Image (cartoon, rainbow, N blue to C red; front, top):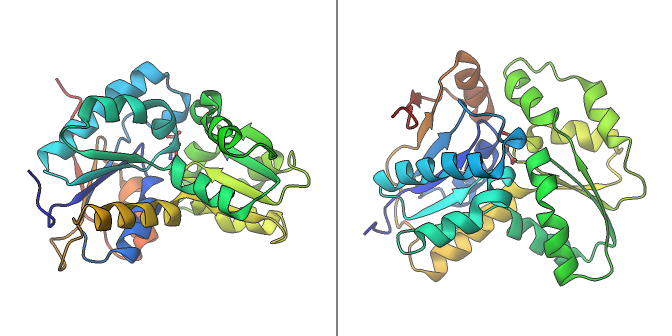
Length: 267
Ligand code: DGL
């Protein structure tokens, strides 16, 4: 059984989940994080549910070998397609939470009437955002759009900072009269400023990271598992290590990040 001092496991297809990891580190500085980026299979957004379930089971097993006390699926595509399966399969071993519920709780709290949602094809095809919102809130107009070019562009260009503004605006131009835009992909906060600028700061831009961090804090508090003092260093693993990932992760945290390659899919 993990102790309160055990680490929190977090995973994504690549860099995007780092936005959630950072928010958790800032809110809960005593917690240690074990991060896994499945860069070998990035992007998750164009994968079938069946394949995503296969990859994410392997990642959960890997994190369990690190004795984590909870697992955060810091990826919307995996949260949308695999969270129920993983929870069903592993509920006796570990708490598993996805990024979707916490941001939707905020949408409901704010009582928005007209929102936009952008995310990967896998997330948008699942229809989960609309499903949960319609279930909880009758009078909301939702405009959802798959934006499949964004996550691969961010993953590749983050370390260079050469984003193609036209790709971003071609997508955003499709939204009219929205009060809020949900960034339903954990990669998108990395271009949040560009999105804000596009809308002249007149639309609220919401992303998963801070709401997820809050949900992690609530869960650890309620289950009496908050770490009491600073634990070991955070650890970052990827299934395929590239210079690009190391550079982008270091840039994102503003310090050199040690990234280890662990091909958990080898056999
Ligand atoms: N960051 C992920 C998400 O939130 C996945 C992006 C991708 O790999 O396509 O959906």
